[in-house]
Length: 342
Length: 246
Image (cartoon, rainbow over all chains, first blue to last red; front, side, top):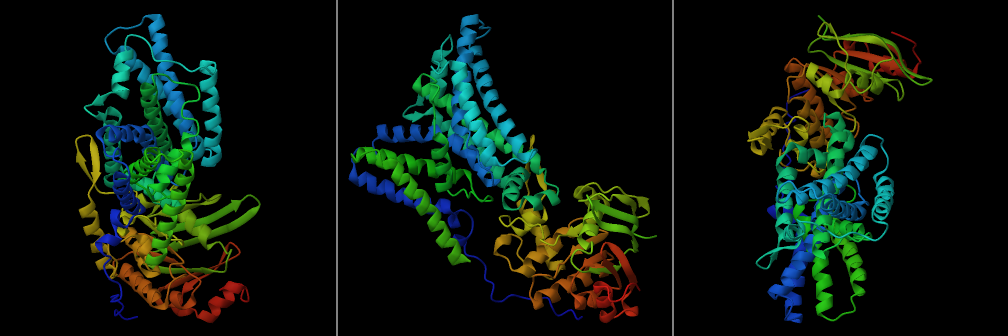
């Protein structure tokens, strides 16, 4: 055996910058479609780009976008979480019930304490759902679809039980503060949008610049490889489901603040919109692909379409049909592109 | 002193006895071929050495002391690295990210630790240069040829100071030219003083790089002899059972 096999593949070129990274991802294509749509809408309706309408759109997509960030993490690991809608309702309900409870008990040691305790209670309840999902999926090896289908129903049932199906209203000394931190605005910008940007930035750094992020992608691309190379697969999976539920919980609290109440049927079927937003934004249900930017782009696209149809005086019932068509179109474009690139 | 010594290793899966009473030794820097037909127990043996399975009976000694290899991480700490048959690569990560998966280089900033992408890419590029493989550290594994993927899996074993590398069918699914590359890599590992156990179906590969061949049949060791004292015909006969033992 001689040493002449130091091969050079002269037919292998460097991939171009637009064939790598963000520009080569489905997220970039959907972003281009979104920008196009915004331009078209701005011509079709003079009201579309008014500050009031933009503020509206911003608030509306922020309602689901934080949960979409969370579910994107789960989808990157190759899992799914159908219980996010119910978790949104649970966090809102527990927060509201705790505020009421503290009010009745007249427990108010310092300014803002009722709000703080209620938020901790609401988010802990959400995290508990995620912990249940994560342990069942990672340790007991149950299927993510079936497990979270179960928690979808269980958690929704608990919300009805806890409120007798009537829903609850935030009350007590911190009610105004609660509404300000959830539904308030800085100028024309809803506060929820700032929470979203902070969460997205943290998620971007975590996915791209920490070992944990690489482990999330590794689990989604080849779980067995992760195990063999010493990645704590079970632990990362549990963390991802807890984060997903926490994100849903944050969204639930924000929505209940804007509504001024936490109805028991809050966010029913939101899981489908949230999964749709994640998938449109480029998260691949097969695992291993997805990102923070894509999740937000997906949410904006869905909201712009909804808003655009209203402004264009199109029957709003068309919205669902269009969102469905866009899911298929986004996946189709990605399919065509990846088959061309080999 | 032997680098690895197996004595009386037996592995049962319920009623199936996959390995029965297997003993052999590997010397430092030795390249040993492990051959056998499908179901002979080769992969089970590899998985016991790399810490995925625990033997039902028997003992392992590594560098002279008793070793309980209860996880792939433990095997790595001892200096045993494995190139798995399916390569165990994550397609959606780059070559460098795969090589460093589970032992990333990090920079501490306050309480947080961030990846050192540049350092990992540079080290990966160094490893590929050592292996004389035309593989770029920041390319995604999903875009790579079979030979390049193999190089990534082998480069991963070179990251730490490995003493023994197990290769499970490294030439099973790649082109002729890539096979030559992989065999060259094995030569370079040997030059670096690293012992290699090569599990293979391909007779020419084993005879090209190995000094010794161990033949398994139905979970037992039927031969353990120097390559120079054997022949492809004899090994074939041992694998199929035409010849009982040698």
